[in-house]
Each structure stands twice: as C-alpha cells, then as structure tokens.
Image (cartoon, rainbow, N blue to C red; front, top):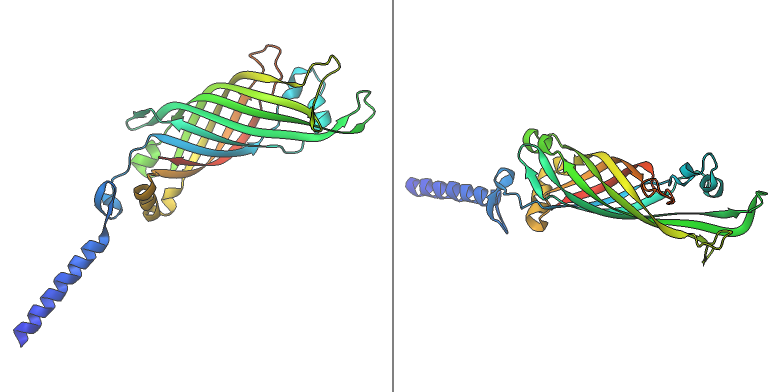
Amino acid sequence: MRSHLLAAGAAAAALSTFSLNASAQGVDEFGAYGGLDDHRESPQNVAFELRVGRYLPNVDDEFGGATPFADTFGDDNRFLVGFEVDWQALRIPKFGTLGPGIGIGYTSASATAQKSDGTGASEQDTSLAINPVYLVGVLRVDVLMREFHIPLVPYGKLGLGYAWWDARDGERAAYDDQGIRGKGTSYGYQFALGGMFELDFLDPEAAVQLDANMGVNSSYVFVEWYFSQLDGFGSNKLQVGTNTWMLGLALEI
C-alpha cells in the first residue's frame, strides 16, 4: 500500500510540473515560446502616428507689422489633427532607425469678417482651412530602450512641407479687391524634435501578447516641437507654416 501511495505522489508531482511548464508556454505565429524572456519579437518596419496640436499659422509674418490674420481670427487656440507613416528602412545597430516619413493634417479657423473700412466686424462669416502635408527623414534613437530598458526614444525629423489653403466667405469662395480667389498652395521646409515614452514598460505581458497577435512591436505616447516655414522659400506665398507643440500616439509594427 505504501508503495502505491509513493507512486501516486510521484505521478501527481510529475503532472503538476508538466502543468506548470505548459501554462508557462504559448504558441504564436512565430512558434512556441515560454514567458516574456522567450518571446521572439516580430519584424519591425513601420511606425504610425496619430497627432494633434495647437496650430496658429504665421500668416501675419509677411505683412510688415500688420496683423490681418490675428485681426480677423484672433489668437484663440486652433488645433491640427494629423496622421504620419514612417518607413524604418535602416536599422543602425546599437543606435536606432532611419528612414522616410510622410504625413498629412487638417486645421481651420473661422470668425466674423472685418469690414474693409476698418470700422469693425461685419455680419459675414469667414474661414481659412489649411491642409499641410510633408515628406521628412526620421531618425529614432531607441538604444536607451533596447539596450538599457529605459522607456524613452528621442527622435528628429527634417524635410519638405507643402500645404493647400482655402479662404471662404460663409459657404462661398472668398475673393480680394482685385477679384483674385483666396485659394492656393504654399511650400517650404520643416523640422521637429521629440521624445517618445514606451507604454510597453507599463504592462510587458500585454505588450508581448499584442506583438504575438497583431505584430505591434511597441506603443508610445510622444511630445514633439514642430516648426514649418511654408512661404515658398521666401517667394510670394502665403505663410501658413507654424511653430508649435504636438502630442500623439505611435505604434511600431
């Protein structure tokens, strides 16, 4: 009887050990893994950003002291919502990634139009809509995160910007005193400096599951100082660039 009890105890211990090992393992599209340390990270090629920030175009910079934009629209906060995709074409060992990025955004300002004789506001609404797009080189320095497990990724961006803008009086297109429609394009250069905080640091197990199930390597929140000079490189173009801060969410896949 005693031998039977010992045999049963050994079998129970073996079964318990097997159960613990099995529960510590999982299977994803890259094969079996056991816990966080054994997970094989999926390939990382692209970063996606959802961006929002205060956007006051520097229209008044070109009028030598006059402030037609501020006089019409005031200095209330106007916000831009945008989206960016970066191709992380080159992985620099022990440093970070480098590659091209493309982005697009939208912002608008609206107010009651001022009378042309300067006597105050009219009863006519007016608006200015701006759609900036850009192509930049993006350098992300993720060595702190990957080598030292510090969840910070500084980055820089530099490139060219282009914007469509359209001024309207109510629902109609706006025209100046010479009959020229208030619609056009502006272009120039831009750059940005920012930092990302890795959210995976807050819940590593959930991050592993997100990578295994959806191929998301890392998720971040970020803050960025953003500057754009969209004046046609000094030619006769409406200056719709800005100098501002951006906040957002980013995913690397």
